Length: 174
Ligand SMILES: [Fe+2]
Ligand SMILES: [Fe+2]
Image 1 (cartoon, rainbow, N blue to C red):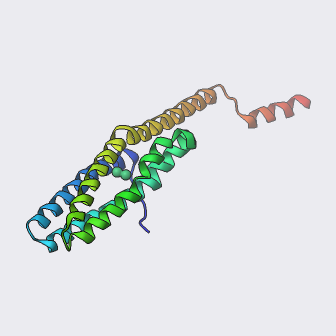
Image 2: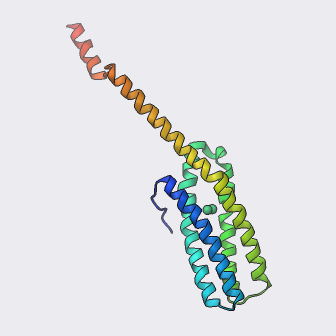
Image 3: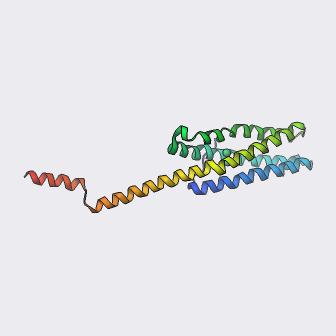
């Protein structure tokens, strides 16, 4: 079980976006290694991609999705849920490519092409829709906290202090 990384949201999203490029780059290098007859090099690249992917989806599902669910509810998060449901088929294809890389066959190129297509759709959906929505939710929550703080500060100046009110009432009866 991989634990989510505790990073501020903006930083986390930047890391996730950079990992998309890292995953795609690692797969391209693995393909080159396979074509060059270097299964050891391919295995090393694929192991790295799988490790990056496991941490990556732990953060997307554990942090981005829970933030969206809190902000927009289940119905408002349907798009993100659908996009994140692609994690399982992507992972299965990664494992298939890893297994076939030891014995290159037609299945390797079919799985590799399918994986590349799915990853391209997936990362684009995250970068264009899911991540911006999460950042927007965080901005709104922060703005509402800021509004709350300034209202509190303003009302504090007027002296709406429940302790003083109680004290006033007490002295009125005497
Ligand atoms: Fe993802
Ligand atoms: Fe992602």
